[in-house]
Structures are given as structure tokens and as C-alpha cells.
Image 1 (tube, one colour):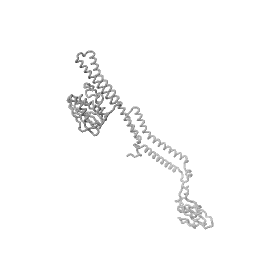
Image 2 (cartoon, one colour):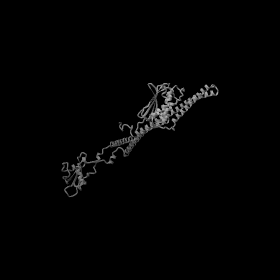
Image 3 (tube, rainbow, N blue to C red):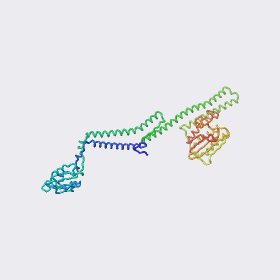
Image 4 (cartoon, helix red, strand yellow):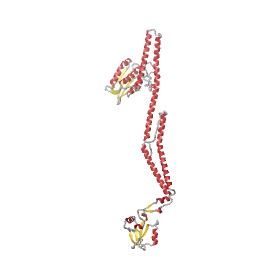
Amino acid sequence: MKHPWKSRDNRPLQTSLTLDFLLFNCMLLLLVLGVYLFIQKDITHMILDKRLTDPNLPVEAGQYLDELGEGPRSAQLLHSGGWLELLDSNKQVIRVVGDKEDQIRSYDEDRLFLGLENRKDQPYYYSIAKIEGDGQAAWLLLKIPRDVIKVSIDNELLVSYLNHSVFFYVFLVSGLILLLIFVYSYWVTRRIKKPLRVLNLGLKQMMEGHYSTRIALYAETEFLRIGESFNYMADVIEKTTEEKRRAEKSKQRLMVDLSHDLKTPITSIQGYAQALMEGRGTDPERQTKYLNYIYSKSVQVTKLIQHMLELLKLDSPDFILRTERLELGDHLREIVADTYGEIEQKDFQLQLQVPEEEMYAHYDPELFASVVNNLISNALAYNPNGTHLRVSVFPEDTEIRIEIADNGVGIPKELWSTIFDPFVRGDEARSTASGGTGLGLSIAKKNAEKMGGSLELASREGEPTVFTIRVPK
């Protein structure tokens, strides 16, 4: 699993921006810390010499004159480790308030003045105040250990010890923060703009007709979903465009083939009709032959037009499909029985394999009968007498498979890819000897697909032609 800080692929945009904002705050914190250290380093003099005592602890002996160890200030002093000494006029210690930590019992003026200097190397802080009155005590001496006195820094004093003005440092910090905000904003904008640029380029290429365009995004989840939707849309458009192109091409070829197939019999009809009109068929036998030929060609033209209309009807959006859940076995037996006369006439050997149990499927009875009749008619038309014809039914889990196979001449392999296209025949190309229109298999395949099934061509050993119809249950 990828760490969220290492990669933004497949990461929600909200999470990504949140993590970026946290990173920005960390950078801002480091910037402030760096500026603080810079300012600390920029101070030219140490100000420890200018320390002030903690304001919560009175450090002047005169503040204790009214208590002499019996008040809250005295308690605070004793708690901090300090004490009070009462001296007589000769500087002798006559009383101690608190725990005295040194052994001095008397002071001369030199020692006392030296202590009041409060140098760094002194162990105690000194302060003295005169006691007014007729009592024995004349002086009050305050002592506090130097290591327990808390210190604070006088800000005005600090400013005086900086190399630059306060405005300089404010301007510097503000400028660095603004620079960081600008860099962060540019970075985030660039990260969002990059996938949008890829999407815009893809859309531009699609608008120019390059429907094979696909995009690959390495960004947050929202952008990935947009990219997937774009690629799906491109797939649909490319597929639709290709189908439209093939339909237009098929339509053009259909018109050319239809014109060719109509022209040949009509030309023959015109020729024989003209011969009769000019009196070239004088004997009754020749007249009958010419009339029979005119009739057969007119039947062929009629059949071609009917098939053409049927094919166009299947492609029409107004076509109504009437599918029902019906028993298929008996219906198939009836269809084969209707063609049995033609099968016997051509001396075909029929093998009908339909299970005895009932088999139900969803199909249109008329379309299904058209598909089966077409395949059987093709087998009778293109194969010699005595051909073995097999019609078998195989129930499966979700569909019923019907096979119509024969051991006749078969269909050339080079025609397999186009055998279901209009005006393609299994015999010699464009031969009309059999009277076929070349539309039968195309109509049969469309009928099967309209019912939600399929029609496929295959071959097996001993059966070069095997048509398989699949009908959903």
C-alpha cells in the first residue's frame, strides 16, 4: 500500500489538499522558528547582566520592615530559601528570620558594602534597610540565594540590543510568509492544473475527430474518475462512429449489389418480352419457354424485393418484437415438418434430434421459424441430392442451442467472415443459378439477434457446414 505522503495517485482530492495544507503549516512553523533563531543570533550582546528579579518576590529589604517575618511576603521569602537578619548598630546579628545558610554573625562596613554590590560570583543576593525606632535592632538585612531568583527580559532593552530595527524584522518575516504562501499556492494550482490540461487536450483531440484518443492521469481519485469517464465516452463514440461508418459503407454496397441483382433479371425479362413483341417466338413451344423464363425472373425479382423489405424492416426503429416464453421442441418439429416435402423431393437424409422433455425459451415464433426455414432452404439449395441433414437441440443452463448441419459441399473458408453480409452466397460469387438473393443469411442472423440470441457458422469432421442458433431461456 502506498504511503499517503509519498504518492497522490488514487487519493481523494480533499485528503490531498488537507495533507498539503498540513505540510504548508509545518513549513511555516519551521520558517518562524528559523526567524526566531536568526533574531536570537543577531543580538550582539548578552543581556544577562540586565536581569531583573522575579516581580512576584520582593527583593528590597525595606518591603519587609512592617512584617519582620510575620507576613505573607516573609513567608514567600522563606519559601524561596531566603532569610532576614536583624543587625544592631554595630552590625552584629541579633536575630534571624528563616534558615540562615552562612556562618556570618557580624559584618564590618567593607564586607557589607561588598555584598551589596551583588556581583555574579556572590552566592547570595543582598539588600539592607534601616530600622527606625529606639529598639535594639538598627538594620534589616535581606539575603536570597542567587540560583533561585527567576529572571525575565526587558523587551525594550532587547530591542536596543538588536542589529536592525523592529520594522526590518517584521518586514522580513512578512515577506518570507508571503513568499511561502505564493510558492504553496503555485504548487497546489499547478498540481490541479496539470490533470485539467491533459483533459482539455484530450477533449480538443476528440473535437477534431481523433476518436481513438485516450488519456492517462496520475492524480487524485476525483481526476481519475473523470479520466475513466472520458475514456469510456471515447470508447462509445469511437465504436458508434465505426458502426456508423460500416453502416454507411454497407448501405452503399447494398445499393450497388441490389442494383446489380435487379438489373440482371429485369434485363432478361425485357429481352424475352421484346422477342415476343417482335414475333421471334412464333411456335407455341418457344413462346411457352420465353413466358416461363419471364415468369421465373419476375418471381426472382419479387423475392429479392421482399427480402430487401424484410431486411430494412428489421433495421427500422418501428419494428415490433413479439417474444414469448414458449415450448420450443414441438414448434421446431412443426417447422421441419412443413419442409419435409422439399427434403424428400431432393432425397435428403434427415436426422431430427429433439429431446422428449419440454424445453421453454423466450423467442418470437415468426422470427424463429424464419431463421430455421432459411437455413434448411439454403442446405437444400446448395447441396446435391442425397445429402445428410441434421437438426439437433441441446438444452443448456441459460439458453437452448439448435444445430442445423449437413455433410454437403460446405462453404469456402474465404467467405466465412462475410457470409452473413447482404448479397453474399455460398456458391460461386454472384452466381444466380440457384435463384438465391444473397440476403437470406443476413436476415436470419438479424432475426436471431433481435430475439437476444445469435447465429454462428462452424464446421466439424464429416459436417463441413454447421449453423448454430442460440435462443435465451
